[in-house]
Length: 454
Ligand code: CA
Image 1 (cartoon, helix red, strand yellow):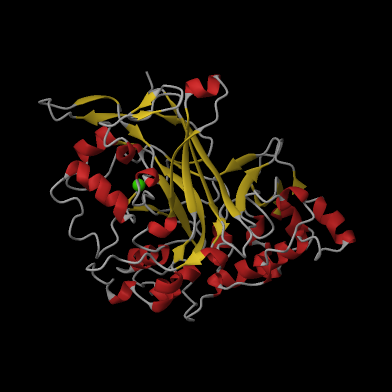
Image 2 (image 1 turned 90 degrees about the vertical axis):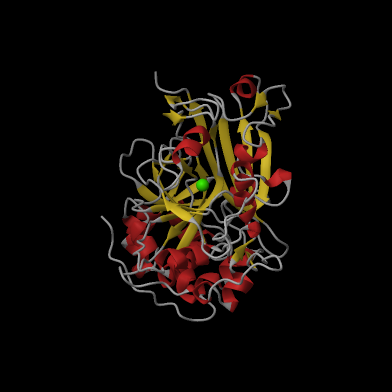
């Protein structure tokens, strides 16, 4: 059901997806009280899209999160509340058609939703009708937001790449191509699951260095990776590329992403072609896609490369991306073990990092991906790679935090972790905040480890 791709249209130096408008005004409040709390992930300024199934209803529907409620867009479209150009796309079982529609439709829809849900912009008679389109969260099941045709995972943090490289190649942690070419690999779409889906410990081949031959069995080095996932909007025809200046018009929004990784399988299989079964058994994403337009107040300069690093090649460089290509997003990992769950202990923070530390911008990743004429499609997912920063507290996976298990973590309750144990639940969270803007959250991405199949 892949919708037709549309050609890139945005060529302006200030892409519309990055422009501020009245929907970002931090003073605006919603008539849905839960959206107005200072710590609410989904205030009026956010309006993220997701796909849900309401209790007793088998049909997936597109919704918008507002506070602790969901606005059912199929219901809103049927009542003629939405812009004509967005109406059909909002009544689908996935976000792909809306993603394909492009920035002009996204912006018109966002403006209308902001108006309908704003306390000062929605007259009382209309509010009563909009209220009928609200779905209380109880009994709602969140589903994957899109039919994900292609999933690519990048490796965009030089800190992560260096930390991991040190463990495997102490003499040459960062390979010479890293600062020139955004490194990535094609992942597996079929095993992408929504937050809350349990993850079964995978079996596979591994070969400890002191053993003469590999063995097959449950992974003993199961890990998570804290990442951001970006959904592609309009794609590009095969054979065409996407100039960097046009890239913002092809990025719909972001989710939290956990790239579950079996390190023992990975270290045995990764040469010479890269990750395979170590990573394709499960990837978890958060359910609400926070649009790039919602994140406009949190644009930041791209990562400043250390002196001596090469400048990006011309197709990966422009002034706009250097000035606004970064995202001031904070991302965190917490761990809830079986024992902590049983004793009612709060999840333990493992790390927190900033997306501003990423060596490559999302626009550079997208442009590089299409630079050879590879056709991206609406709903394709681009993983950023593990978000790690320069400090020990910002290492976004256990491989880095425990130095491949050689420096175990001691949790406050006395438990020790080298890698994940059965029953461990990994919880990713993310938020953006800065003075003069309303704080926006990314929600949550959770997954609990189940024992390997018998
Ligand atoms: Ca990864």
